[in-house]
Image (cartoon, rainbow, N blue to C red):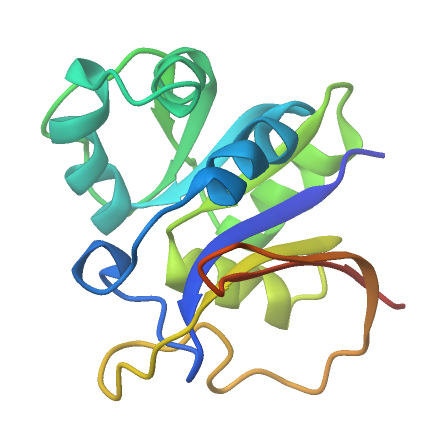
Length: 177
């Protein structure tokens, strides 16, 4: 069975919304990207993330993520047609949770969820997420949507952790069922 892997950038107080407004970067964070995407052959995006990313990533030279996200199969959770085309992007037909349950049963690599807070929350609430790969920044943002707000109790097992030279915590958790 394929795994659902949520990769998210968070502030220390859990804010995941608009990380570019508060997040810095260092060599350890750069090194974590290939490990995050290496096993993924599909991505699920929410509509808001799709609309932001379709304007940025096709012309980006930020590697290796630009090559990955531009080539990978992208499933978009939205109730309306996509306004702008992006290679290998399709709208999810029907209910997100049902679609992901079926997708997990198909052959293939891991399925990533990147930057899509509502998609990640829905899949966590439905007990479909297998791993959380979080980068937690050394800042308190105070306002913004938080990844873990409103979720049921979920038990996690630490798989890996690292502290970057500039104080970012890189943590990978497996969801315990």
